[in-house]
Image 1 (cartoon, rainbow, N blue to C red):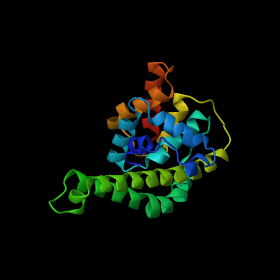
Image 2: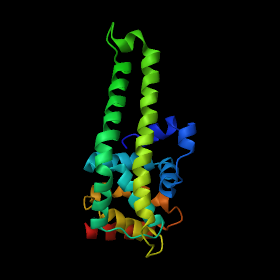
Image 3: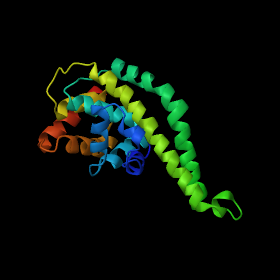
Image 4: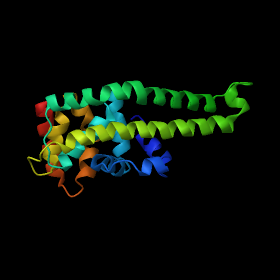
Length: 205
């Protein structure tokens, strides 16, 4: 989900097919949270730094918001659940979208993108819509897995930090981005609680 914000923006007007899709609390959460200030930038920075799947990052936060504690084996199960789909369906669409953007922005003379830029741009928009559907299906799978889990704790910055610690990759260089995630997920949390949650998280990595 490299540019989920761009993809969601392009897919805000649902097609008839998309409007009939199953309800998913996780998908609703992701679309809402990802558009809050600072969330997209934080997610992409963590993705670029550690090669993370943003879907899984948002899933860990959603579970915390539901009071569900994550653990490394469960995170690995989720990763294996969606990895084949991401690799075979979503990532190729993403690669085509990127390639088309490059052709549009730097079209060579007599190239197809230079001769018919409007049609190439329309094709790219179609690819974005397909990519959105692919990401939607990924999140339906993760949401179904999450729906099978039972809440065990109260939603809090501490639980969110514990869930993120299961990725076992974060350190002090990530503190600012992680703080943004927690701050926007729990806007009423006192700064001291945010700091304590992050301190505890790094202790678990």
